[in-house]
Length: 404
Image 1 (cartoon, rainbow, N blue to C red):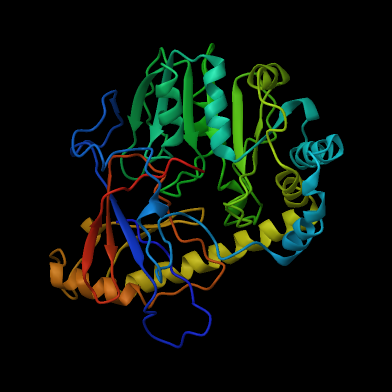
Image 2 (cartoon, rainbow, N blue to C red):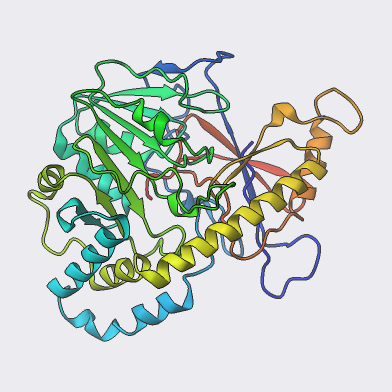
């Protein structure tokens, strides 16, 4: 199960929150193998269930808090103010000055040259642009975000799913030797595993491009040194690395669509060829400049510290509910139903016990700044159950979300 964190609803008292929906997902492992498996076919089953074009928001209803995607209550006030100040400029096309300011801010943040930065209308656009590199064989490290598969398969690339098994480490990963592109999340959605730079480096080969999805990287901290983004490769200059980043997660801007891509100038030039005029609007450019600036980065670090505290709290509450949790390094905490045990016994918890656990988890609220766990933009071999506030369950048909 992948328990989603909850948050306090303003005005709500102690106890269960009637309008809160908790979503848990169960990733289907390939057999009982303890090694990496590589598959190239689409899983069998309902076409609607496995449809990567389905967006989880479509299953929400009035009065229900949307846990189908990893969104936050709203952006910080300093960012809202910066965006509000530019509303009057929406009557004009995005300016070259705003484009330069945003690009310069991102480049300065990561110690890169402006020629190594490509601003995006959301990180998902970065995966769409990868098709311009014409990869022949793409290895997707799973479980992970579905958008790379969706767009690269549509572009005619051969796709191999490199499915990691618990604990989802790259230590013994096997990637097909002829894969000329590898895509991996770091930290990974939905496992929240933070791969080391050394493990990412082990994926590199002559003639291969490694694409790293760092949409959640600004929520990571080194637990010992406290260093922010300890395993990020955003500042690494190399011809075979592409890093895709998002500001919509930590800064609660999912509706604005803004992100960026870091790569060599040659790759940036190829990805930019034929791109439409004004790919980002004025407000997206302003948001990028602010979020990559000093105030934005101070906020991101503070949020990473808050999320670490929320994660520790939720882990403790899960243990009290007799659910074994594995700590991630991002805004996601995973619990394994196979590790659940009835109180005082060595046998798996019964369905009745699990319903009781779900009711207890509804009380494990973690504060308004908490990320809610893995969004459904994950490897499509997943099942989701939604625990209602009356303790019942329903099966959600669409676990995947193609947009990031």
